Every structure is written in C-alpha cells, then in structure tokens.
Image 1 (spheres, one colour):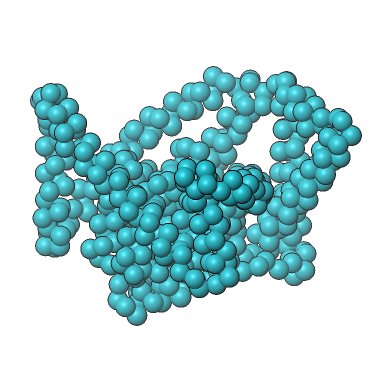
Image 2 (image 1 turned 60 degrees about the horizontal axis):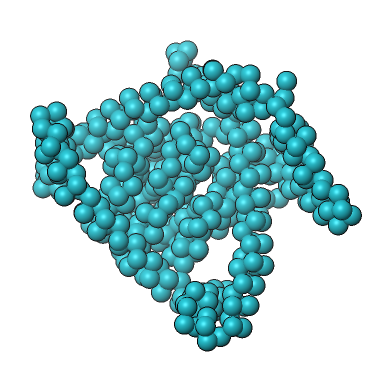
Length: 259
Length: 203
C-alpha cells in the first residue's frame, strides 16, 4: 500500500536507483569509454599536504557542524570519505593531521579512518588517537576551538568539507589570517559564496557528494557518475514535458504529485 | 576475523537504519518501528557523549603530561569538573554561571561573524580574474539595492537588483539544488549497497 500523493515520488526514486545500479554493474565493461573531469580541490590535497611537510606545520581538517544523525548526514559522510584520502597523504608526507569534531560519536569513526590512512601510507607509528579532538556539541565551542587552534598552532593547511553553518565564516576567516592554504567544500548554498571568497580550492554543491567516488576512481565509481548523469537526463526530459504541458494548460506536475 | 569486525555488519546496519524510515515515509506501514529506531538513535547519541568526554580528558591529560598548552588544559578540565559538580550541588549557581558568564561570552564570540564576514568579503574582492570582477560588481549592486536611501534615489537599481536576484541567482541556485538532490540519492544508494566504504575507515 503506497500513501496517496507519494506514488510518483516512489516510482521516480526506484527508477533512479535502478538505473544507477545497472550502470554501476555494467560500468566495468564500458569504463574505458568514460572519463571523469578532475576536481581541482581533490587534486590539490597532495600539493597542500606537501607544502605543510615543507613548512613542518600540521594540517587541520573538519567535517563541519553536521553529524550522521541529522539531515546533514550525506555531507558528513562525504567529508569523512575525503578525510581518509587526506590521512593517507599526510602519512606519506609525515605530516601531523588534526581532525576537530563537535560530534562525540564521530571520534571513534575518525580515529579509525586516520589509523587506516596512516597505516596504508606506510607510516602507522605517526598515528595517535589524540589527532582526533572532540570539542563539545555547541556551535560556539566548536567555532572558538578551531579558531584558537588555527591562530595558536598556525597549520599550513585548513580543510573544511561537510555541513557548514555560520561558524565556518569565523573558522575560515581565522585560517585566512593565519595564512593557511584553505580547501573547502559544502552543499550548503548560503555558505558557498563565503567559501568562494576565502578558499583556494572548493567543491561546490554536488561535487562534495561525489568526492568519495572520484577519489576511488575505479570502473564501478565511473558507473556511479554515469548513473547520476542519467538521472539528470531523466529530469531534464521531465522538465521539458512539464513546461510543454503547462503551456498547453495541463498541470502535469500538480497531477503527478497528487497521484 | 571476528564476526563483529566484519565490514558487512556496519553496511547492513546502515541499510536497515536508512530503509526503515524510507519505507515508513512511502507506505506508512512501519511507523512504529521507524519511530523506535529514532528513539534508539537519540539514546545512542546520548551515550556517545561519554566517548567525547573520554577523548577530551585523554587529550588534555596528555597535554599536561607533556607540558604542552598546560594552562589551557588545566583550565578546561577544571571548568568541566567544577561545572559538572555544581550542576548537582547548587542549581542556582549553575544557572547563574550559564546566564552571566557563558551566554555573554558566547554572544561576544558569535558577534565576530560580522567582522569576519567583512574580512572574507575583502579577500574575495581582490581582483584576480574576470570572475572576481563580476562577483565584485554584482556584490556592489546588491549592496546598493539593499540600502534604503539608494533605493529611493534610483528606481532603476531596483529593477537591476530584482533581475539579478530572480534570474541568474535563482537559476544557479536551483541548478545546484537539483544536482545536489540527485547526488544525494546516488550517494545514499551507493552506501546502502556497500560501494561507499571510505567512511568506514577501510578506504
């Protein structure tokens, strides 16, 4: 039994998921035919960590105020996916990575990610559980802690990938004053302009969500991008149909959303 | 490998935790189970604070042992223990500290946003590329558009400001929003079928 007004939504979701899944399965055969464009913010990770190694200064990383128990969960997951890659780069370059979080349950998750990253890069002895720092659940505490750390320790690189609220303005502002290379990424629309102004490299909107797959770079993840492109084609077709129907005096979307 | 350490376990838990509310949303059939799951999340998150406290204490005790940022660490541990004790011993003092010390300090720190917004704007306003020039020009127009005196003096500015807000701004905003929605669905699906594992620590 499907609730009234949700049939169209459900069909669209199921079709989208099925298409993406089929593309992922078939992508291994077709992978050489597709190329993914490069994301400058992800490409810059090694360069930024290299600079931190030259300056003998740490790297600071944060996934923002969001957690995995709220509406920001996908953003936080994507941020954590990038954290693994940053930990690996730091392990290779012998750089201290500090991860700050306002969510207590992310502490063991991040510790595991950091440990795996440093181990994978052949530098497991460098990892310490203290690299992950919990600051308390309040936004102000998170903001002041990161600002204090940046202005005291002067990390060479400051990265914020995830859900950001107004505290990010202060954190990035402090990073700019400390002269950090700043890498950021958020799908939070109100904070994208702030990040554009103050970050050296940026992931805008959906780029953050696909970061995990982009870093993976396997044929399966290329299929993931193809599946996503297919969604967009499907939606564009739907927009054109809706616009044509609306011009002809028939409210297609209104009809479908009450179905 | 121990059964509980297998990577499939968190993936299955993730899939169950994600699909249950989704089924409830579309069918309304598993509302009791979905609401029970949400209660579990609240309980788990509350217990996770203990992990946070352990992390906080270990970090600062290590700092004290190594003689690094020793005064900050003593201050934070002292404040934590004092405030925890006072919460049980004297509720009046607890409230007084919160309203006369924490709240004003918090508001003062939050007000930095204004200062940092200007800093960020000035950094963005450095003309390094044609895009930066465009950004600066649009920012100035919108700034003037939001100034009552200028609005009164120049009605044309209202037309230009409205056009910027309603056409290029809304178009870009919606484009990003639709792309994000699609990516979110695909990310969700990728995590459910166990393709997105990087957040689990295994890379």
